[in-house]
Length: 355
Image (cartoon, rainbow, N blue to C red; front, side, top):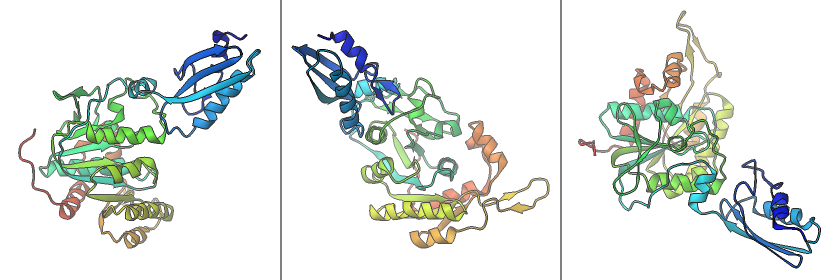
């Protein structure tokens, strides 16, 4: 009869295709038993709703059934604990119990549907403008697999815990509160290779289990697309409105149009549109270049029924400051325009005392 050691060695050849590690090293194989040709074990998946559940169960069962002396294989699906999942994905800080009190006046999502249009830049500049106008501001980085906010602000972890066990967001140089998965990772360059359910869970925890204190505006930097993460924000967080970001080309307008329809489907109000990368003015000649061709912004404003909040040009000095983690040093008129546009549509009384 095949030994348990041989069974584990065989199961070590079964790879999780998304984590790129074998199921034994991941600690998925549990409660292995052998008895008269029958093998039983539990396969603890990262999440119960794992989309690869059937594939992993079948591959594990098939691998063991090829061993000599094995007549039947019974694999029971299970799931990891939250602590085990965090260990697998390299998150060092344990998330504390849920908060029951919120002091966030307005939650604004920055959305596009299209990747590469500058959602994080718009989120960062909007936060800077609101802070300069005297408001208390935070940013929830909901782009779990591609977080950009810490880099823009030159922010680094690790985060600390408040007295009630919730996580404290990192404060930027000017006092903007930031929370991102990159502030939880032991290595900021580590890839976050997560499936949809776990990403959604993390976003919800960033809202419920972070000590945001008193904020006038919490900006949520969404990932591209119209899938789980975006839907989680729009349905699980009390979103007061959406700032939609696009760029001039027709392709961007078409894809952003899908995001507009998603927002309309879930009854999330679109406050306004920001057109990014509109043009480039050569610093030596002053000549303007429309890098991405003629603008199609009218298509987006028409289908969304929302006003144009701002048009942001391409500026190398802004890109250089963002690369240095100094977005708060950007001094451009568009920063004030962005903030005024949002304040006009979603006014709040300024918080005069920092918590």
